[in-house]
Image (cartoon, rainbow, N blue to C red; front, side, top):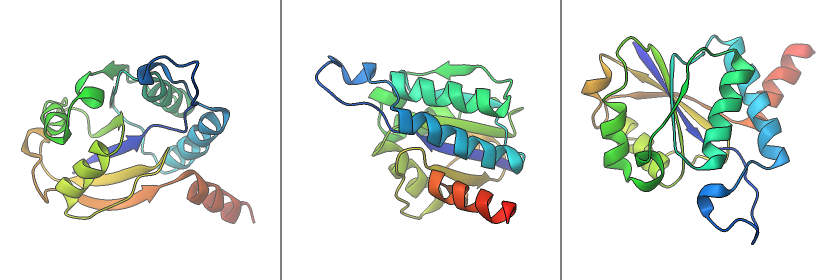
Length: 169
């Protein structure tokens, strides 16, 4: 059984100083949210073996910070289809993931990520910034198809903080 972590980028800065949407960096809150979610994932052993990301600065930063916080050995691979492509192009990319990767993470944007999760799990799931849908995928990546994955959990910064506080008490 493989695990796919579908990661919506963390909160990004907005403003007229960013001439292109691709150039928007993470906001301070986004950076903190990544650390929170990464600790929760790490505590359950969900460390990705392969990470693919949109070329947008906020997505690349999300992927890089997530890997760093988890001591993940995977290099972040950048694919234009995760920004410019639609859900079908993103699905084609996921079908080409390395079959040796038991856990893979895809970092991108809405609405394509929500469409991807709905297609793979037959469940509509809202993905806010820095939310991660954990999907169980039977078989090989190349076999990904409609309803072929099971939604196991949605990781959010708020829920991860609550879980950590519960463990401390």
